[in-house]
Amino acid sequence: MNINESSGLAHEAGHGAAPDQPVSGTDRIVSLDFLRGVAVLGILFANITAFAHPMLVYSWPGAMPGGEQPADGWVWLFQFVFVDGKFRGLFTLLFGAGMYMFVERAWSRGGSRRLQLRRLIFLLIFGLIHYFLIFVGDILVLYAVSGFIALSMLHWTAKTQLKVGIAWYLLGSLLLTGALGTQAALEAMPEARAEAGEAWTQMSDEWDKQIRDASAEREVMQGGSYPAVVSFRVTEQGTDLLQMLLIALVETIPLMLIGMALFRLGFFEAAAGRAKMKRWGWIGFIGGAGVSAALGWMALAQNFPPFLTQFVFNGPSALPRLAMILGLAALLVLAADAASRGWLGARFIAAGRMAFSNYIGTSLVMMLIFQGWAGGLYGELHRLALLPVVLLGWVLMLGWSRPWLARFRYGPLEWLWRCLTYGRLFNIKR
Image (cartoon, rainbow, N blue to C red; front, side, top):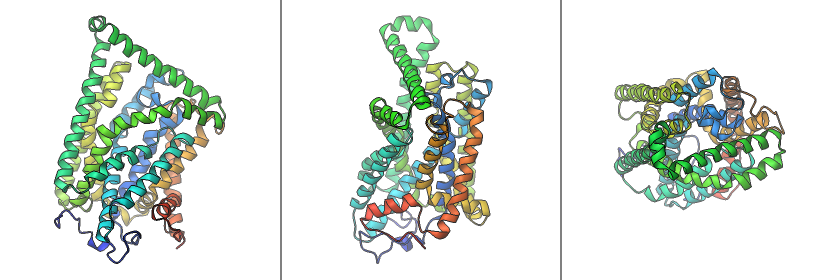
């Protein structure tokens, strides 16, 4: 590894520490924490529909109980352009960067990837608990499984990780675009549907099954007890975890590779130069948003045909999404230093240092707000009415993180994860 790829982090490596001991948490890259803070707040905005409605509503407004309202389409379009996939992608870049930084520190102390493997195993356990007991939209299982695969690619050069990550992501996007595009084309052309025969019938039957599954999910989430909800997830939604492997293959692993490479090339410390990063950041963000808006308008203007909407949501939108993720990351890196000196920016940084606790914590809060056995708002609020709930979650995350870190060294789940990873009990108090 050359000096440019190391990101100048020798001062953080903790050479005097044993391989199975953590380094001090005092040396941190501010931009990483700031980006994590923005990402964890953005993920709540992306997930809010899935907290309040069946997962199908997340991508298809037609599944909204009682039918969609005019505002639902416009809020869907805004989320599609600026939120959906962008903050998950940003968080995935950061996860890849964090993975490499963790292992780099272990290597500098004579350790190996074994400690990171142990860390991922416990993340998988956390993710399974989160999925079955709290929120079916969990991403931790996805990160753990993807991390197991990405571990074998840590020794690649930064340029190889970057090239393979981008090529892999683009290839996965093209494959999904082709597969979903066929369905959308058949939906739009009656003659083609007639010629497709049995193939179209199977597609229609599968879509009808998704609608029935959404109805069953809504029924148990609205009227079932907490044990009934957990039972439904185990018996009816447990196999949905296997679908995460597809997301891992086409998005998560390649984005992790890109995040590793960007970390090693000094991206998160603006090594490419502020002017260059600002220019390309805005080009990526605005250009990607423009293409995404055009794609989203295709679905909105036709009142969200099911297969067209799924095509737009999961197919070609992945390409401008990557540009927006990288553009947003660049712009936030440039803003991090100034933000760290302000009241609000410091709270974003604190929220980022506790991103794990905030991610699970907001899931708990949303569960108590929406599920029928608790707050009872499941299926009651349309997309526009969900925005104040998002704001509430943001206020909670920004409000508690900094006071907590003023008294404790780590967030509660960060502390637990660290103790499990290293197999020892750490002092959490300052």
